[in-house]
Image (cartoon, rainbow, N blue to C red):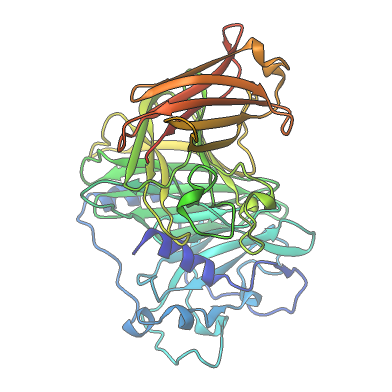
Length: 509
């Protein structure tokens, strides 16, 4: 299954529900639950450890007739939200379910937990609505592909979707005023490697029943794949930005040298840096436009995303990373010119470690793409040492689905990056616009531009006041041989102190 197929299918499964439904709509019986069994987070960790001690056994596939559904046929069945879990109970959220089938060929188990007892949610075709064009299919061996949470996000009394778990270990969320964009995953394995990528899956979920008016929802998940099993918990709090506290313990079956922790997956097709490659009426097309990092030394680093001609993999070495994530900084409709996709409303995703993660690196994988349907960007944390088999490896972090990252704001942020061929001389000009910030001051003559590249030659670094933004613009020229891929670093200093983000960029012609 391709990365983008998973996310596209998750989107189609929830078509027609984006606006939410009134909490007082007509009452129907909720989904049916099976017999209770004891459950706790400790029991889940034990289960994951035991699972890792045996060979991987994939879940049974759903019936062939469900797997053979095409895109249009699969759109003709959807959950009837009148049967939602916790409906009319005064809980802060309700849960809807997605059927397996089409690309989602292996069902996941879903349990509702209350008072330490877990009861499986039973698949019942009568809880789904279908059009007249949907075929009559067998239900033996059928199940769910995932679920979504709905709550009062925008308006009181209207329960709106704000989080989805569906497809492999993918999940996504949004905050107030946002529309779905990038996704997160439980774990990435071998992303960008020549050996191919392994996609672990959440094969079972436990959703804890919240108290009325509780601020958050807790979900537990069992992850499994040929190389690893794991126990996850998610504490989800919706709002202007939706936050998740994630705790996981991984039990590798084999040593994992290419594990990606807290991975984010996004799409970048083009912006001002590569606009000339695309014959498109829009000014830009992307779910994210940069990778933001705050390293253990406190440097705030901005790396604009690119859509390279060949696979690009970048490693940013660090120890004790303070946070990283794929950001969407373009926030005006005019930045894109797309009245349907609303890229300006796509969330950013900031990863904030809870506790020290020690030495390692932030990895960025950029995959060539010619259409916006492909997720071609992945960012993650990789520890410097492999995750050894036969032991547990614990990670805890917060995910902020936000407009902008919750950083301290001590330096000027990058607003825009542009590039173009010089007209009357050799080389390529780059311009970087930094936002208005007190640290910059108002006099560009007092700012020192530090621009470096190990490949090629940097010349004519110039800082100017930008009246359009109220900030500063740094411009410079790069001369590099054709086919070279120089890594450029640029920053502004004042009185010997860095006053801007560190701008990093890999240029390829």
